[in-house]
Length: 122
Image 1 (cartoon, rainbow, N blue to C red):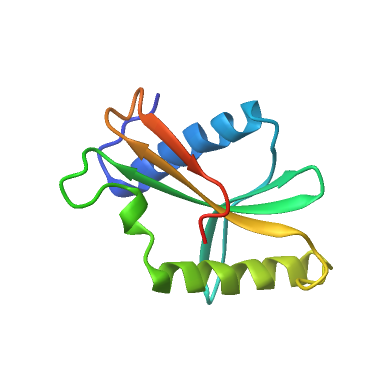
Image 2 (cartoon, rainbow, N blue to C red):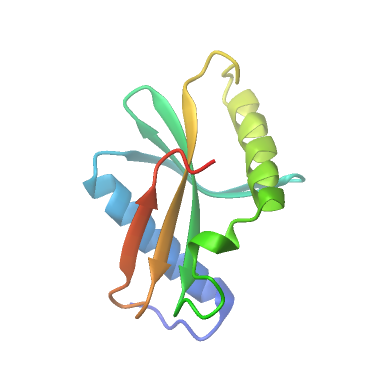
């Protein structure tokens, strides 16, 4: 496992853990770290005919509310705008395409974190 001595490498590690976890749950990875002016989507996956936009959050502990509370309303809005752009770039109509927004919250030791999967988080 790569060193996690900075936030970028920690993000890469946690996003890989989340992608592996979701793949084992039957989802298929379409894209990672998709970004545009509006923001970034950590993982874009599909589950049958549904596009799943995933925000991955890691916290070593929950002293400041934990990983789940770190996804603010402003962050949710940015992810939704970015997802609309992603669908447009993929040639899909955001109004006719089944999609949802999930959060994968990882907490604890990064080598073996506790994983919480919130489907339809926002």
